[in-house]
Length: 251
Figure 1 (cartoon, rainbow, N blue to C red):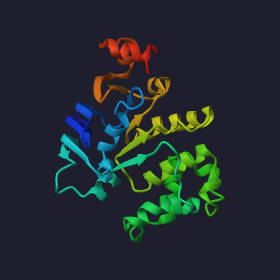
Figure 2: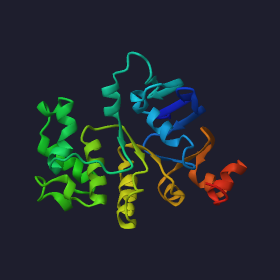
Figure 3: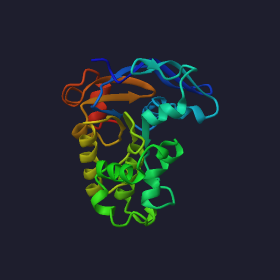
């Protein structure tokens, strides 16, 4: 089966700073891929290359190819708005809009002009159910999203992404600001979502990577040192630097 996403010899620069160095990997459809490594190693930068979020950074430049269903997303003909609909992003800090719960989830379909074709009530309910939040908020949809707990806000942000029906969900440290109970809910949700979505997660929590992912990539100083089945990365790494990191010798 073809990978959902494939990167080929990706190099990325912030001005003269070479941040990603010849990164090539394949991301499997309907599975979770975790990216691990110490702070500043390039894993979040790499994640953002997968839906061109780095485009907005002055002086940013990319070389190589990022293929989504075998099409290079950096070709001039690619509609970036459509790309980000297909490849959604959940950020480290929950970032609900200062609107109602309902309006947060309905925001994407409205912005994309989909609300004329869709029943927004159904979209909102479906998205909140998929994000395992419907039962907690179904009677308070008109209340401010900012009144939710941190874990609920992060699941709301996931529902907001799901409302535009993406194919891939990118998650940049989605649990770093959450308590253990909320983290567990997000992890369970991620595993459930792989029935319909492909997920790529950046995490500093190696136990989390081991728990939720099928594939793991280890980044160090802008290079992808090792990539493979998560069970192999954590039990029998091929590179000494990977072993040193996952055993806590540095990082």
